[in-house]
Length: 162
Image 1: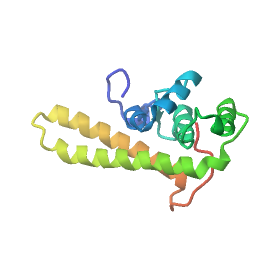
Image 2 (image 1 turned 120 degrees about the vertical axis):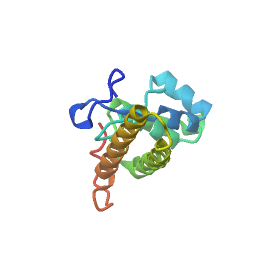
Image 3 (image 1 turned 135 degrees about the vertical axis):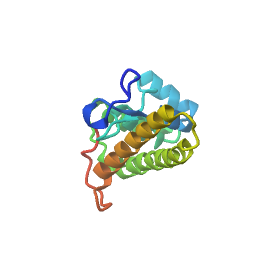
């Protein structure tokens, strides 16, 4: 979607899918406060290649159960070093990938239900737009999954972060 227009995916290199509604409810109030202080609360998305850095930041923070507790200050410092580019995040990569793959699973389930239900719509023009958009979203999710785990389901490395 670009300015309310549903462009063919091949022609819209800037297309992205928001996962903010999926991610925000999973964050504790403590996580939200920390993310807000650091400027990373909200605007979580992926495009046809990868999850955005903001999403990476939020998911990495989710790995710290109570980020405001004094006992977790070292973990929070590692997280902040990731944000600043001083840490590549390799230690947490698999845990982060599992959460991100879970978001894709949920989105794919939602898309499957939407595509099944779209046939019930009476207006063909609305049905076509919804079907086209969900097909685009599911293609992008599949592309991101392939970039993360490879075509054979084997993990490729950490090059999927944009």
